[in-house]
Length: 225
Image 1 (cartoon, rainbow, N blue to C red):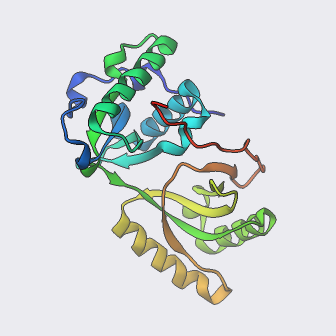
Image 2 (cartoon, rainbow, N blue to C red):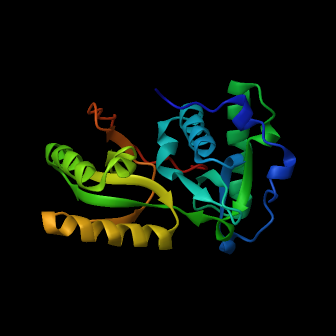
Image 3 (cartoon, rainbow, N blue to C red):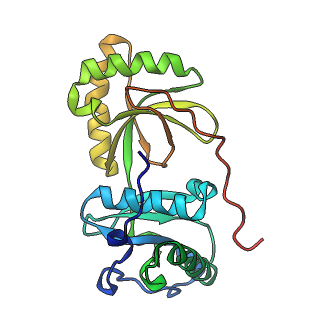
């Protein structure tokens, strides 16, 4: 079932949007935060999926889940633009989302410094072109590491077309390194390995039940082409 951005997620108050649009020089690096910050990751995932549904699948490659200094979750778009260009893009996206949801456009996007957000990480147990082989490995990793991992274990398709077996931990770098090292120690006697990778919102093609291959993923077009 696809996740959707609800009015509750979209209607974030001004107090949650602590960073104003267009306030920094281009060389500091900025991105677009969609739907504000959330105490639980589910809200950020809903916001991210809402952006993909509202703006189109070509936006997916630019989106990711991040955390702020208070540990809250958010859906961020990185577009590699200057502060001024990012502010213009944020306003355009807010207007398009507002037209679809009836929410106030000013509540839907905000420009944030990339230096104020932290990327999140997962644990990977293999990457390659053979989906069937990873489906088999999925069962073995789940059996060896238990239900705590199995309930968040998926196979993703990367932008290059390869497949990755991933424990969707959404953790910080240091904590995920520790978990990956512990899992590697448990798996190594069975000829398996574990490593940490950055969360990139890749398409999930297997979650333990059904293989669902997505349509080809496309890169977002230049915003001001």
